[in-house]
Length: 422
Image 1 (tube, rainbow, N blue to C red):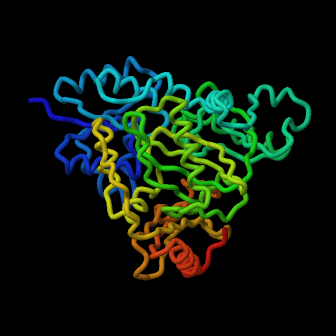
Image 2 (cartoon, rainbow, N blue to C red; image 1 turned 30 degrees about the vertical axis):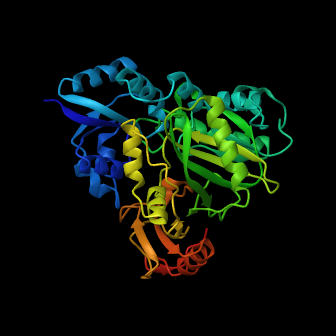
Image 3 (cartoon, rainbow, N blue to C red; image 1 turned 120 degrees about the horizontal axis):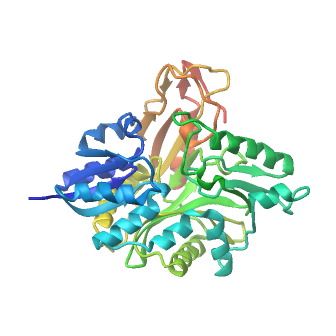
């Protein structure tokens, strides 16, 4: 008898908690992954769920559909594949086609091709009247004299993922600096920190006009083209560069919440998004004008899963597994039990080798984790991958959680030194 199986494509970090949930629900779990060794080294708190993966299938590339479907056909000899989940943008097109072939609710593969192609998606949003932001192809920027925008713009890979190589530019000099960083990724050897065949595919890059305002995101699960909103995720930003997310708050009762959620629903409806989790990054101006900055056909990464679970006393991972199976999550309104503020830390510039990070003991801290292996040389980046550690504080109100988190962050110790500057 074939085993009822859920396929997870390129799982990492919190997705292992989804896998553990699927295992508890009685399903066999299989992970298709381009870097199985990296998956095995998943750190706390999600690494403890690694044993819940029943089988790992190595993948050479997410672009070689024939080879990928050959792997699926092999699995189908012993597995009844009843669900799938694509954990990264690189898997979006394949996951859509796979769900279509399996007869599971999903999205049109052509829509996924549109969504992962950032400048093409922006052009579509402009055509639909859902965006005012201008974009310019990288080749045209190189040919232009001077700075082609009346304001700041963001350098972005055509196929972006995890904010890699995204940089705010205000001049041609800034653009050329971002281009040099980009070329380091394009020319990187396999196995290096810069190597990422997805974001460097076709070597495409572009500039996107800046929309000034507050960065946040809408988290939702779409079923039958109906978005079931989980809430708005706010950011704690301690840098002018909005591509660096140093912390977040959830749920975020934003004063422009109705306009934000209406814009999210309009975008999903116009694009024809039918099924699955979405993480929609947006920037909201002071006057309430909303611009979509990034659309991810998956649930949010980092530790957002833990924040949502704490806020509502639910298991979001179960809702995501139900969605992967093609089932309909409950429609009952979610009741806020508490507010969460999560803070992430980078390392002080005077530290060359990381030894340890210590967080204060406090009853309101519901979660804390070290992100870097002890004895590692310090990376000077300022992205999620360079975070040394994180902790989450809860409160009866959002203001209470945020204020308590701010007071505690001065008590964090790195290599026995107090205080961390951003």
